Amino acid sequence: MLNSKTDKSERLFTEAKKYIPGGVNSPARAFQAVGTTPRFIEKADAQFIYDADGNKYIDYIGSWGPMILGNNNPGVLKAVQETILNGLSFGAATEREITMAKLVCEMVPCFEMVRMVNSGTEATMSALRTARGYTGRSKIIKFEGCYHGHSDGLLVKAGSALIAEGGSPDSAGVTENCAKDTLTAKYNDMDSVEKLFQEYRDDIAAVIIEPVAANMGVVLPKDGFLKQLREICDINKTVLIFDEVITGFRLAPGGAQELFGVTPDMATFGKIIGGGMPVGAYGGKREIMECVAPVGKVYQAGTLSGNPVAMAAGIMQLTNLKENPDIYEHINTLGEKLYGGLAEIVKTAKADCTVNHIGSIGTLFFTGGPVTDYISARKSDLKQYAKYFQHMLNNGSYFAPAQFEAMFISNAHTELEIKKTLDDAAKFFNI
Image (tube, rainbow, N blue to C red; front, side):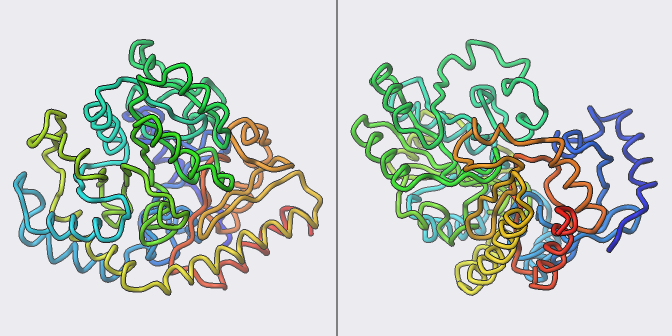
């Protein structure tokens, strides 16, 4: 698995930069934060991906989470192949949309109704608009370091690649008027939430949160934090929204809300709901979702929403997850081995590092001490992470090309891959 050739990837990147901003269609893919050339991927299978130069990598990204069954899962692939024979898109209602809606409403605790969209960004944007329409209020609370997509009102102290680039977490092109109704609290800090409610009590439509933050690296909620959010939202008649684009169907069949036993009013999902196809969804209580057009006055539409190919892939994947709890046992066991192993390595090496993880997702932070919020995550040594990333990549482990992201384990991974990754990590830390 040792990689030495990157000639074709380098040529492709040079050409791509002539026609695509930065040579990529999503910023993290540029590898700017890790100081090397992005690998152009040609194929994926099970727990591996292969680049244009023929290098093979253990895949710990899994298309940023949705490949929970493994890349190119045979069942999902077959469902897609059979569906495309009848057409790629109709722009009309299909029976598969009903099948999918019933399935996710059975699996997700807060879902009584659901609307399919085309991305996680579209899902969060639409959920917030719905919450505003339902409550008649204008302001929302988000948390520092939580990333909810790139709609204007949410690019305020956001996470993901915005942190790793080292600049302002706000985006150029977002006007003050767009951002003025976005209030920012500190993750895991109820005092900061309570202060915002005290000041804007009658004008807060929604609180949106990643129940497990995964876009400033993986940061877990403190005991009772999500429950306290539920309580303060109930008191103030504010809509609580869980952004489960990362955690949904990943931590449990019903997502983080099932795992932690806290039911939000609404939730949003991304690509995992379609087996990796471009798809998203938002849903929640019936009385809230019936504010959405054509029943209600909150407008949202999309030609490709509920696309038959995405629905077929998603139905196959989610049914598999629902009917096979051993999948979660397998990926969580491997998670304990990988992240527990990394924690032991950095402890033995006396390195200033911290490992946060839950189930099959985790992050190795290059900073000592606990990482519990945006401020503590920002203390990470990005240059050291870049060196670590390059070492692991050159030895065949494909991690997120930025410190402030998650690693993902799939059902296709085995103990052999975990052992190799840990052996290579140990070499980096000289133990």
